[in-house]
Image (cartoon, rainbow, N blue to C red; front, side):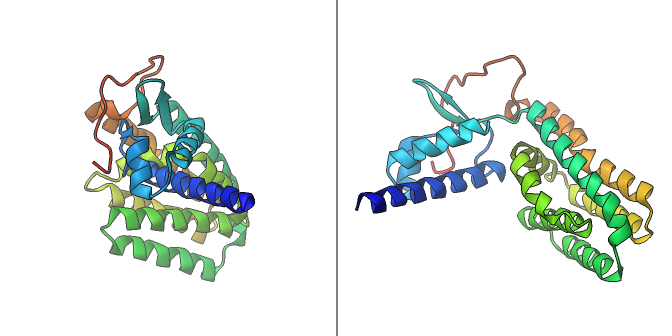
Length: 239
């Protein structure tokens, strides 16, 4: 019985952790939003223990900030963490595309172009984000490094929040799709310089986006060197 209870506790914690992490990364829980243990436990039909443990795990990832006697809050976007994640992603994807140039054939190029066509057919931000993830994973697979996608995913939670904010512009999706097309054109022509240049420009677009969004909505971003303790609780996603 004790073993079963322990397994159930771990299962609840994992479920709560995965749910909260997904909602934070997708911006369903906005940067700076308060996270009430009581409200979260009620919404997920669990005790406060797995909620508290999940918040601690998310705090270790830098996605949640816990202030004694004040509460837990979704961490604001840290441009430094975004830059670190971007560095890891760019290094992996550029190295992989160097191998992809020599490996691609008509079938691989056709598959990538079909994904781009699907991207052009959607106007839903969440759907496009999923298609974008699929495209970049396929680029790694084209280079024979599909397993590296797990490393990329593990590093880019902070980056993904910035990327999602960047999709809010009216022309953002069409620009990104055009950049995808340029990468595939380089691959199709077995032109390493063109493919890498197009991919590098595409991956670094987040820095332009983040600068513009930060100017418009500074409250979403962490300020370097400041504790940025909240002065009041803000409404959570379930209120």
